[in-house]
Image: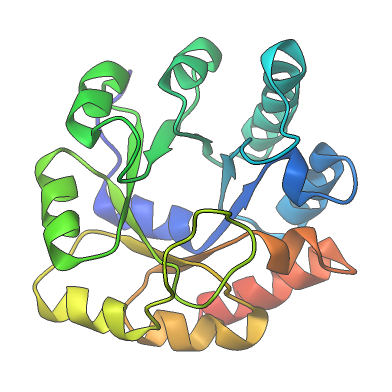
Length: 218
């Protein structure tokens, strides 16, 4: 295994971060991923959670399909909250929330793979950095329906607050981010945006991704 990802490289990966699982998709998830990769997605997170989500072999098969697509495109494949699955697949990294396994424990188990941690306050962000996070997922920035357990939306102000507090780690904003809101989120201090429904629910997946990429790379 090579060394840890550099902050510069991490910022590039976070530009257009697609998060999805079967419950977020109205059509076959790997078809959505294919279109999204064609549009310029820079990282993909497999998040198979929520009512009606896949378990066991079908879940692993879907994860492998999406991982293969990411490998072919040269895009990191991240697993949400399931360290066993990430290690089994030899995924590029893991993303954990505040209620999941502690970041310190995950870092110990995954070695130099990418570690993303969700944070909602300056204190949580500092603890995540201490525990070895490579990037922070901050949100929900705007109200979202993609997560049943989503916390209250904080608005882009939380991103300003983190940067003002001296948090320099790469940050991705998540939660209710649409094409129209990308520039506001990047302008507030995020290095990129993580989206679910703005892509999975789009009429043209590829065009939606291209529009977000266009705004996040400005």
